[in-house]
Length: 301
Image (cartoon, rainbow, N blue to C red):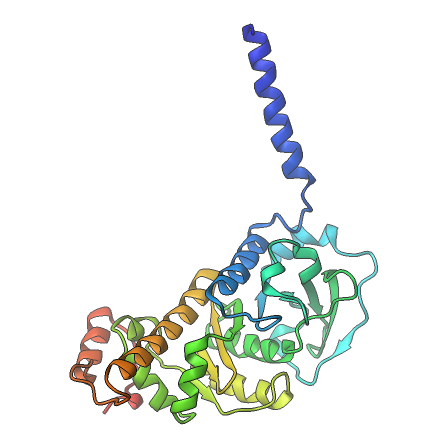
């Protein structure tokens, strides 16, 4: 093979790679959509998404909407009224997992399992403008996500963009043995390992057992999200929020790991929570002081 043949071969390989990249649907190859799909798969690999359990929403930036708009469907779905309304989400666009769609399938076929929805000018209805092929609709818990986004946008001055709901085993198990009380649950999580007070210094909210997907649980959760980055649904799972996919997944992962550690310690201790060693309230204060964290003092003795 002479030099020209070698150069031509490299050119053909490069052209092939470019052609393959361009041939992928434009929306699916956007960085935010790749991050969205990765979080879905990460949660599946953790075992948090049995069957079609769990859901994820992401509030898109103006630039992301502008980039994707040329690829939106020519015939958007019908406007669907929500039982909730938010002035600060008028005209917002969300990427959302579909009702009845499985998290484990998101990476395999994003356009079938994920959609982009547009909120109307009144902030009380949405329509599908991309994805959710074959008649798909947003998760049945979209109203909970929507209200939580509204609250977290206000609480974080717009920084929060991700709301993630999953069914972590140990968090659910924890609600079997502890009362649905934010102070009790938070203290247990903080004292499970030193990282927790660093990850969620404000604590974790808790909603008692309620009907999933209902307006009641949406309002109860969003009320707690005014204070907390994460809220546990007793007997059901966990809602976590954050500015990006990594922070949100990391928050849920830390809470679930702390719940697991507490459960293991109980088993090793014959079921008693009177442990030989634990993290004291003063230890928690020292950690917060060292890292300049705004610790929720209401949860300390």
